[in-house]
Image (cartoon, rainbow, N blue to C red; front, side, top):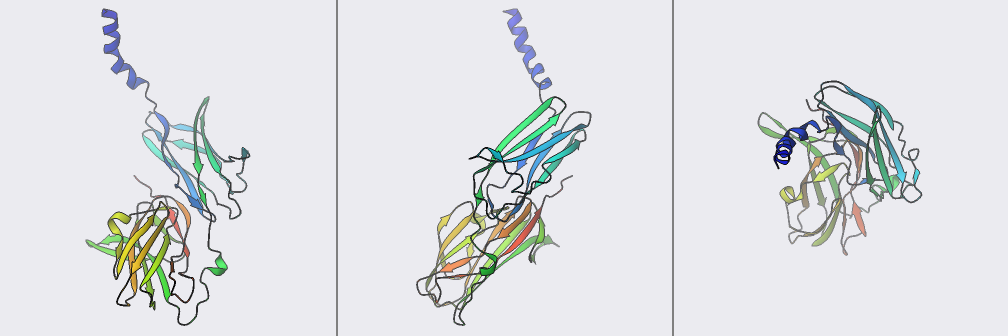
Amino acid sequence: MKILISLLLLLPFVAPAQQKTTGINLLSIPPFVRQGDQPSLSYQLFNTSKKDWTGTIHLQLIDTLQKNPVDGWFFNQQGNQYFTVEPTKKEWIEFPIQIPFEYNKPTAWQLYVKTGEDTILRTGFLRIEPWEYAEETAIPETSPESPILKKKISRQYSKNAQTQLELLAQNDRVLTGDTLLVEIELTGSTSNKIILSEQWPAGTQPNMVRSLSTHTGGGRVILLTDKELKLEWVNTNQSPMRISYQLLATYSGLFQIPPATVSSPDLPQQKIRSSYSSLIIEQRKLP
């Protein structure tokens, strides 16, 4: 009994000695991507030891149906990298890839971190959504009496204790953690009720609960998923529809910004949609 008690007393002191001092701290993988996106799959390595941690890190993409590597399809040209993480430091390792338009197979990723005889393995799936808007039909031809749908995205930032907006153009750059304001406006519509369909860039997360606002008329959310919002908008005074909400830039890469679309039985066209663009999100470097 005395020996057992002695061993139990020693256990709290043994456990910390077995704690790993190097490894993978965080994964930054979008929950979904769209065909045509160029995400950077990011992995944060940590080193709490007293000496440099060096080795190689390998990323491979797998067709889960055929069980074959498909790195060539995804332009995974930096799939093998050397790394060094200094003592008490953390480092992000990024693997830029490109999602092919013609690729729609279930895909998984495998990450190997090799140092000497030790290997760390992480695996996961890459959810690929189809891109529904061909470039040549991004802005459909409209008749003069058709309503006009506009969508713009701005970066929010503080200056002199006030919130400022910076309107983003094609391929403008923001950092992970930045707040983005999406504004949608429909003018020239005589419809009393329309359905708005809105999808956000794959590298962002919506903040719908706190920020969704219909500035005119009344809005009712009829669908909200991790990539899409559908809203029924009712207007009785023929004023323009104005809707805004916030996004959070979360994952690094180049992501397409889908157009907003509206539909109604009494519109001159079956669907009216805004133009689309793309956005570059860069990993924020923390001290």
